[in-house]
Image (cartoon, rainbow over all chains, first blue to last red; front, side, top):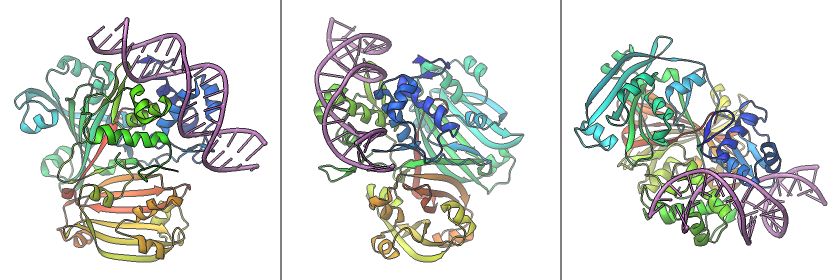
Length: 255
Length: 255
DNA sequence: AAGTGGTCTAGACCACCTG
DNA sequence: AGGTGGTCTAGACCACTTT
């Protein structure tokens, strides 16, 4: 991990350049959608890195649907995902709901927090790839925006993964954030499943709404350096407060 | 566009190598999850391309969550998204439901197909960024698996985009597939919004199920080379027949 | 110590697009 | 014709991990 002048961690120089290009040209709309980034040659001078590194950075931006690269032309900035009043959650990004809210200038409160030390049921055992009966920790809570309940969350993790005292002291609403802040877990990706559900009375009670309405259930299994998952997160969200979006990219066969 | 020996189109050599690495090492489980791809040096020899190209290909695999790359170690293959009996739809992939079904060895039938030539309502106008009243084409139909209705789809496109006769003759259930097959549209990405809904009587009637159950509404705006979208697709899906998943990747600030 | 990825140099040639 | 990206050469040095 290299540390940059901005005090941010980046695995490689190319990743850092990737972020800086976004920050310097795209986020602030300095280069608008449809316009070109500076040429690779110019960027090598701007950032004092080689063309190799610039190309790696631009390739990442391309893979993420931030630019399209046209031979003989340059890197065209694509329109950003449009924002709305609802909290926009980009589903391909491994970031907590809290982070998404914070970036939007909002704050998620935590209500009815419960810490439970228990053992893995068959369900939990499958998700965390642990033997049934192994000790696990469950963290349940409601989340609210300006005292309006918007989500019900349950996180599960193997009891041995992290000191409960550490977890509790660093917990500010998101288990994921605590683990992401600890480099030693090397959290790198998660598999998310999206399921539409109709609110049953159990969850509607917790969220103070009537049953029978729609909700989105997000099931996330988070992986670090190990083959075995580190956390299983379950979230039930009321759709009126969120917007779930993603940029789909054309991919060629078998990928 | 370069044509390869396999008759597939790839924008660049690195993209082709990317696919070939997946096909040769990952798809067939020749390198299992947790194991290493051959070194970059070996891969340059295997594919007779430079290290530059290999590195670009591996960077793409990394961005897509297919491998993790560790300095001093190599490219570790990550576990693939697990498959189930339901049709698994990777939400970040710009591919039609038909393509997903076909890859899973299933076939989606089309029922109650309607072609409508009409004009843009405010709704359509916003999505397609067209003036209200501009002529548009709507294609509505049910989709079924083994005669069980599983989805209701509506596609909208500007009337001038493609000859209706061409579209009709090449249509096999998916408007997206027709346009993807025409290179001149240069379809490259789409913005997807995911909304959980409760089935109302209109759609439940079309799908031959009771109202009040859950459904997933997918709203997709597809972009080609232009700033203006080429297609707006609406899909209502019954969740029991599908699985919607995505790999989330850690991203560093502001990206 | 040996192997791997990350980055760099200092060029080069090609294909592509625009003026 | 000149600029851009795509690819290549033929090295090099560094940081990192494993043995």
